[in-house]
Length: 296
Image (cartoon, rainbow, N blue to C red):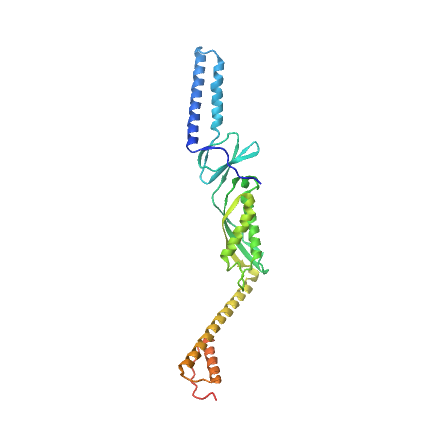
């Protein structure tokens, strides 16, 4: 595995001073060569060895000029010398690096990945459709270039694998307090992010955000699951209605007894409870009926 390291370079003011000095040397060398050639033409200079030094200086200066390059914001430069990783430069602006090194540029910007909608089985074995949106960036450029063949494709494949594993680890919906894909959004997102960071660390990729963007039952069971959800909702609503009705009846009996408005025996108490529960729990509006007779 490649270890990230910095490459020697000049940047900022030092790089600009070096560039101006190098350009001055090139201009001076060209002027010297022109003067010597002019001297040959007028036969005032006859020694050809005088050309050796300015020509050598010009060649070396032009070669060093090839070491200057510009790095854009959120961009890194990975350098390779004779087949060996030499280092990484992340400083923005004009920089001077070893001219003998080959260079590979890589973006450090945030990138989005919208995974394909996958059809998998959840923890309970129900077929579901799931998709995710992942925000990622290259944190270690050397690993992204040298340790994987195509880091963008690697991110895509590993993301799909992580989403499949996540879907099989949680139920679509849960009746108890356990985490589920539908209700535990923050916990599921954090689990997906942690797994992606673990899978993509070898490629120098960092995950900034990972969330489920699409979640639904597969079409073949969607109607059945919809009916089940509706039934569960009805049962839950009925349970809340009954609980509330029991509390209302209990409070009514308690207040009547404490205020001594009326004395009720067990049979009358039971009849009152029955009537109140019917009125409170009924789906339709109750019709008032006046009982002029007696319970006995």
